Image: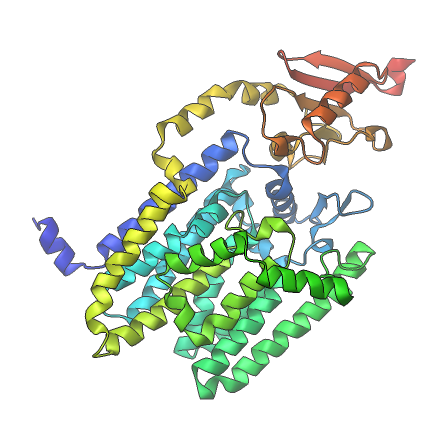
Length: 476
């Protein structure tokens, strides 16, 4: 029987694959438990879930969304993201919504495996490869993407990795298939497409025509999606269009040069990868596009929170692999390859464990697991509730009804006359649970409903309420 030492000699990639597998399992566990703890919200998880679920049943992917004047419309009227329907077959296997969270974590794991093979084709040192894999997965921006509901940006890491692999191998059919899948995840990924086109142009002279074609396809896609398709489906101009004129220029300049939280985002992003991506010119346009587009947007995109850094992490990883290749081939700098790789691993570990407190650390926090049992009463409450007709409920509870006819809390509920209104008014909740209202608004809504003769109250606990609409026959 082989010893561990002999096994590692014969299979030097085993530790890397083991790390990816453990990381993926941790991401699955944390994501699913957060869902069971009602830390996953209808915005955005429920919207994606509803659309993908309906498509799996060969129905139009109509969702409830506040951006729609009528309250409901096909999801493509908000963002043009047809590639999300690649995941619809998952609902042929199960009806459980958690499958999307598992798919998200597994997708990142798969992208890391593809990244490993890309890196191995460039670098001989397994320690260097392991270092950038640790950077890719340990990046706080990636960890936040994995714990934040479900978003197409996280799934897109797989085609991003495959696209670069295909370009390196000259497999252009695979390249363009991946390109269209990436663009199809969100119309704003056209900027990434332009960055990839510039990457091809700067990578090799013979890739010039493919680079120009990639840029052209991306720009045409952006125009068609934002100027024709989305306005046609929604009946209004593109909702997320940037400001034009003096106000737009001012916002852009402030976004780029205002050194506040953005400076920290830049530092943490590049430091995680040992600042290697800063020295790889071909992918700098794509990296810059990701950062600048976020820095000139609303504040939530300035930081490493949410899902916006997942594509950035893939680009940083690829840049680091190409730079490590140059270092390994350099007689002058080759000797620093292993020490610097170990330094990068140390930095990532320090930021994750002590400085930025990576959220996947919840996987080994015992208090996190006990929280699931502490809120079991909410799950028991939801199991007793009806699911017929139109249901109005909170942002956190809405995910549990996303396959049904759903709307979020609205003081003007009489306009749509929901059949059931479900409230959990337990004090001390996350304010996002009541979005688009506040908890005080929800309390006021409860008072209004108590005096509404069209609704009958059923209580399931101190602060758990079900208001059921009484039909006209019953009132008479």
